[in-house]
Image (cartoon, rainbow, N blue to C red; front, top):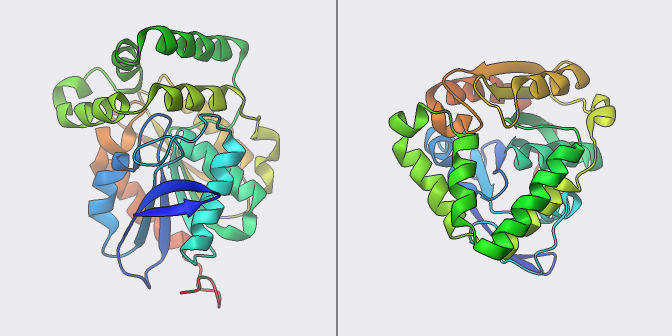
Length: 274
């Protein structure tokens, strides 16, 4: 489905019973809502799942290609308003995890729980910024294909190329159809993101932090940083997984979600308005 969100055409899917607890799944940079296919299949009976595509990603419109973390947050809030949802659980991977944290900080009244997967809360280092600048220039000059193949080797564990070939091909396809302008805009938005770590103590909702034990892109040490900063949060490692935990080990990932999500249920009156 498409909605006019902040003057922008945003694509999203809604799956599951209207009266079920709402969970919003937020994908990573250069991916789409299809990242969550295995979670959608597992949780659509017991939860109302909302799966949006960020600006420039998936089927959402590109716009001007100038994106910021704050813009993604405000699009999310406007989408929740459009769907008449007041409080939701946010489950985000990488960029989606950062957007989830920023939403919980900027709009705490809208969030009943957080799942922060394969993500980071700090700002880019100088070397990280230079890498994003270099990749952006390379995409503008040579297109996306060479970058995609290098990036896939960064985000998937080596064994996944033998054991999860369909999942690797899915992400490859999603990235290949993403317009270069949008991909560059997403890279720059990440380079410009703020350091959230000093503010994470303000988050007071149940929070699960998930890291892939083989993740070198957002290593477990960054997940520990988040877990240390958010009071009462829990940290879990997904074995046999790098950056793409929901796809590389969906059985373990879904097990962690199934244990955690009931803790985020908000039964307060007027939580969501139909």
